[in-house]
Amino acid sequence: ARGVQVVGLCLGAYVLAAAGLLDGRPATTHWAWADDFAQRFPRVKLDPDVLYVDDGNLMTSAGTAAGLDCCLHVVRRRFGSDAANQIARRLVIPPHRQGGQAQYVPQPVAAHPRDERLAGLLDWVRAHLDIAHSVDSLAQRVLMSRRTFTRHFRQATGTTVTAWLQAERLARAQHLLETTGHSIDAIAQAAGYGSSVSLRQHFAGALGTSPSAYRREFRDAGADARG
Image 1 (tube, one colour):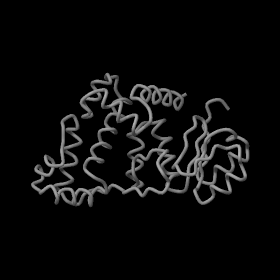
Image 2: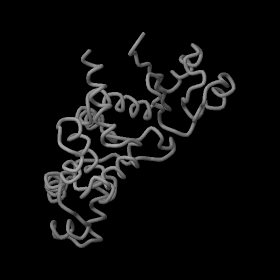
Image 3: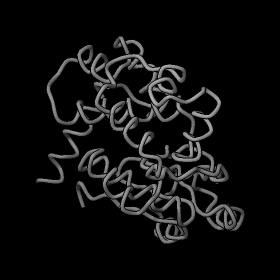
Image 4: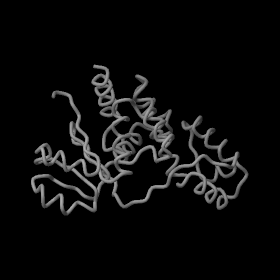
């Protein structure tokens, strides 16, 4: 039917392939069954090394955790990053993993810091993403040495300061693109990228698209969901 999106999670890709829906199209499935899948369905452009494949109205994913990533991707496209992030927090899983990411790469799960200083710092940074931050400036703010701060930060969040900052800036930019009519330049400043060029570079690297295209896609997906 027109406008219908079909998703095959994990071995669900077998069902779509058996129905002929994946002939000539890119797809993935659980890595342990990739060889069998390729033999059974040689017309499918199988990529066994990714988390999920979004090919427009057809989506397929790898194993269980990748299936959750794929579902979050669907929620993000239709209802926005805020809704997807809320679900991810409830499930205690990373809020966003790109479909093209390797299946074998372990991902840390961000935790709520038990250290009140770190918890307060993260809230403060989120409220001030428009200004520049460095490891040294943040360590100084919580009265820690650089070495102690980076160790505590990784223990609390499961990632590095730089990676966390980039994820927060990207999430802020996505939110503003989805909910406001602000210019790309204004959004770049608000999210702390400094310039629209930097925002476009980070967007392309993380999401494989441009801010303008992301905004159009989100609005189109929202219209489809309401219609």
